[in-house]
Length: 184
Image (cartoon, rainbow, N blue to C red; front, side):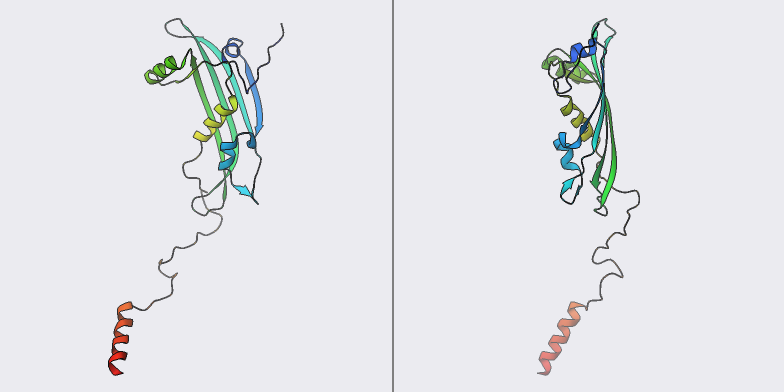
């Protein structure tokens, strides 16, 4: 019996799950354009990290004896982001793991998704796994990328004590001007 090959860019989910398929892979970060835009650019060019991913299909019986189609997705990448404290590059390890229940039709997916905690999608014959992996990695981005300890001292804001030259009181300057005008 020959093993069926599956295309991750046009994945037929039902047969993949029926075959209990497993597929690991790698894509260059540039293949995931929305995620690549988030990466810190070195000399105007984004470093082309590798996105590692794995999928596993599964068919399982539910409590009402109906057979369910599941797809388990795992993806990892290390991105250089911009630290929001010091504005220097900071490495962020993104790790996304999610399981999806597939059902027939968009309406059934929307209804079931509202009723249960599982992530529910409409069953497709041409699922673009790159989009799904990219979506999951985007969702795993840190809200505020930052170093635990910034490598360089943070610049001090103007007005912080000891970092701004002493300025004369504007009212004292005005009073001196008035006195000078009165003498003239």
